[in-house]
Image (cartoon, rainbow, N blue to C red; front, top):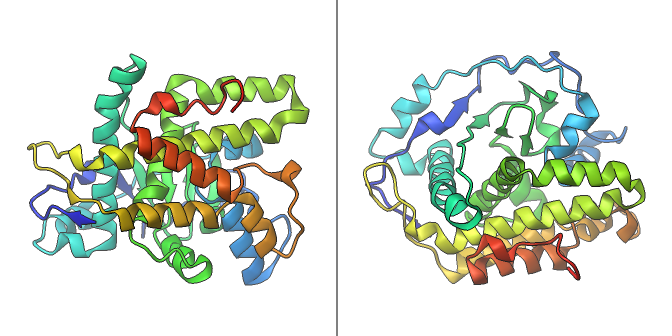
Amino acid sequence: MELNENARVDTSQVDDRRGSGGGGGMGIPIPTGGGRGGIVGIIIAVLVALVGGGFGLNAATNGGGDPQQGDNTSLEQKCSADDALKQLDCRNALYVNSIQAYWRTAMPEVFGEQYKPSKTVFFSQNVSTGCGAADSGVGPFYCPADDLVYIDLTFYRLLADQLGAKGEFAQPYVLAHEYGHHVQDLLGTEAQMRRQQQRDPQNANALSVKLELQADCYAGAWAKNATGTADEQGQKIFKSITDQDIQQAIDTAEKIGDDAIQQRSGRPVNPDEFTHGSSEQRKQWFTKGFSTGDPKACDTFGAGQ
């Protein structure tokens, strides 16, 4: 993967709340570990939430958060410097730029609906959201109550050190998955799925899996088209994305499958408890999105899927 050093990092698509106090204690705390303590419990709690969602957060908290605004001054200065792409936060902001540039074009072309941009919130340790108060233990998530993506960037260290997903392309994959949830929110897919869960609670987990796998597939569709995305001045954001980069995303998808998580936690594999999909399913659907480059191919809710 090679980013274009001439591409402008649009930090207006990020809300930098690091150092803003985070908002801890506001709203209703989001459950992060089911009572499991220690580092293993934290890791598993993050794994359960990883790349997933945020869609469960709204139901868990009934909202009640009081989101605060961040201060992008430092980020803007850093990301306008010559060495901006050496900085983790600037690279992630540029990934967000690419993902949203793709959906601004793809969503009306594929679904006939206009894309509404969403900011990514960078936070440290804890944050107040439209879905309630959250901490780093829930991993990256999307909150449908305020239409924002949230991430503590230190999460990538856990992803690399604890799961072995060390590749750089794991990072845009995580973000692209969360923006897949935003697209589902805009299209009404998430709301329809929630209504189905209420009507058919016995299949609630299976429906959740379909939602998550579709977000993986959307991430793959972005990855296929990422080299065609550009900044506001028309500069390409990516110079290249290699087969190795895509393999890094696939490896990450496999490592965060429900079966892999259950095994890592020392529990037997139980498909009835899956909420995000098995390693093979996550690999399959990301690969399908990438191989076709077409979000329409991501119909995980279709008959026979």
